[in-house]
Length: 109
Length: 116
Image (cartoon, rainbow over the protein chains, first blue to last red):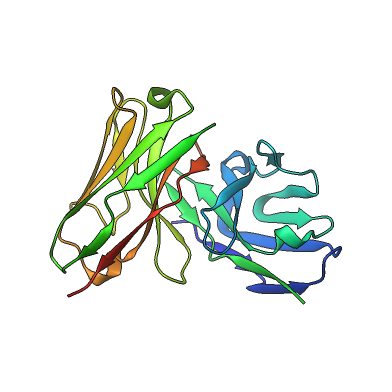
């Protein structure tokens, strides 16, 4: 079973800063099966990135995804006030199908 | 506009049952895989179950044998029958549509609380 480990657990930054979030898989995964989600307090998650680097519909271009193999990164180029949230990476495999990382909280410094 | 509206959550005693429903609109429901993903209070996201466009189903190990997912394409609705509930099943349950590796659209969730 592939385990996704996200780091750091919490990222304290200011609006306008660049945020770099990491997602490491316990073994090599197919990039097309890696996605990122944003969840704000009291809200459902929202798809940001799929296929490791493709932005979902209506996602601003300040969000970008990269990586391959075991190491993937979500970058937010310049944090806007609405970007402070929890971010999850997620992987799909034939079994156990869908797994999530534990999340990274991006908080206002 | 895609909408997924969950219902059926609530308080249930340990060992009890509950049936969640999710009404979908704004997309061609029968073509999409439908999932349930849950989130325990203050915790992360956990995938629970999937029914694909051909009605094949899959489950997380933690719910296999207790939960049953189904869909009614005529009603654009997906269901989750939950039996033998325990405190560990307490969570917000999200209805999610997607295809393949990703979860494209999420409902707002329905809270299931298992407690005596």
